[in-house]
Length: 463
Image 1 (cartoon, rainbow, N blue to C red):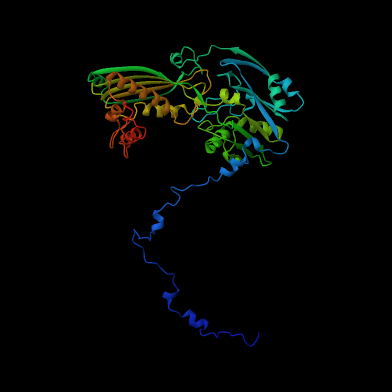
Image 2: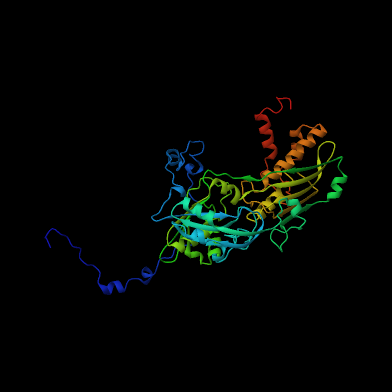
């Protein structure tokens, strides 16, 4: 050691340290704080600098440059391509499926039928939809077989060579006719698979107090979401018996549970990678091809991809529910609503999907944003042999809004009352009760109507 290094001399011996006051050797105890504790809150914490400023979307540049990777842009070595054989008939028993000619084609790696699905049913509400129909088809878009091949073209040709023998059954397409249960879509079950009823006040008394009774039937059509990116998925297994699925699915947690059920596997063996979605609008809230692709991938030992064609989007994915809506409304001479009776019939198509949720929301909202003391709303969802319906933006609200606002315009015209004035008289206000008894807060219906009328010059145009 060099001479210029200074070393501190020991001043305490081990004996001295042992004799140190015991209090100093105990762990320190902090005095308990009495809440609430006042915290320092700077002025900056009360500001949100981003509000009112232009902000760049993180994905905007990639979208603009065309560099965003969707599922159709993803590829893996030795990847196969899948296609599905569609029924092409809306109601029939499946007598036989012959896949021998398709399996013998060069380039075909595997063919899958419903008999090979461990649990051949799925759905977010009711498990009433087969992955691949194996005994009966319920609408023309039902898949009856799936093919994995080295190209999409070969897979499509192989589907054409699959021979299916059907025993046609009488279908039902009209939801009102379906209510009679003369032709059952899913025998022995009733076609009415979901209902809701809301009653408030005394309906007959409300109609007796009315000076005018208005009745009307309104209907809306089936609507497809038409996302720019169709449904697409890729499935691949690892050596540990786990499957990874790349999917445009919007609800991957629910998707994992449904896939685990159909494959009869533990959910921790299933991984879903939610890719960038090229349009959803509610139409990608449930699984479609994922279980079949997983089984094709396991059968071949190779990754398998499938992308819906635009035609498949229309015949095999969910759509917006068509509604038939009957409205009966009692009104006084000065435009006050005294009673309203509503009956909704929803065309649910071949499977339930998210129909229960749609039915509930539609029924609750069917009276409109108006104070109506006497109300009866009844809603029914029906099975038909048509393309299945499901989630779409609004969940039943756009359909009933069209009906009750159409009738409000008819009432205003008949009574000679300004349509805006009629709505202002009956609109919800702070503390109003909804049809289900919820006390509403922060209600700005009237403020919104006034502001909108002012903005587009309702009074100025002589309306």
